[in-house]
Length: 205
Image 1 (cartoon, rainbow, N blue to C red):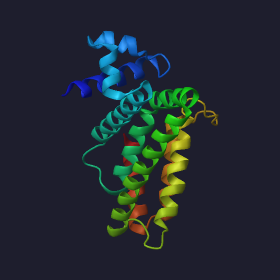
Image 2 (cartoon, one colour; image 1 turned 30 degrees about the vertical axis):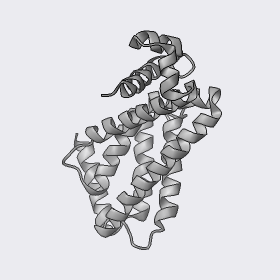
Image 3 (cartoon, rainbow, N blue to C red; image 1 turned 60 degrees about the vertical axis):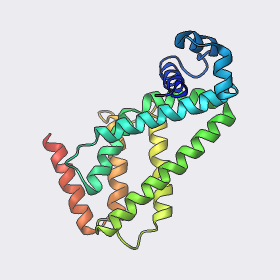
């Protein structure tokens, strides 16, 4: 790991722990045993340091989510497992991005636009693969579907901890309900059977 990578990694850890606003360049430099000048030589300014550090934080979260997915799952259930893992890890993301939007709105737009474009690309690949596997209908408008799904799921995750739900319904249950019914609407009969089998498996566990 290069010195620059070590700086980014440590800054990401401090942001996750302290928040965007509380990250001070002086404290980061002291923690790493390097000069403040060296940090500015590496990144130019604090916003560029924040950009790379938060991107690292989001990528680390994505890696953890991928690792959490049950390897035995495939097809639509594999997506469900991924979304569950995303929901379970959304608290830090929500806190960091809300903090970023408040204090660094332009940087927030830059990061969220890049993250959205990346997320939509991955989702498009997944849905096209499910179409080829006969699990999603060929009649589905993929671009419209991924756009609607992305904003629905991201909206739910950003509301994590603030959703007002019927008594006895957890946020995770509400999230799963929304995701499952979205995919029911675009799935083939084969896909619906796979969804039903997955739900039955979850109920048993």
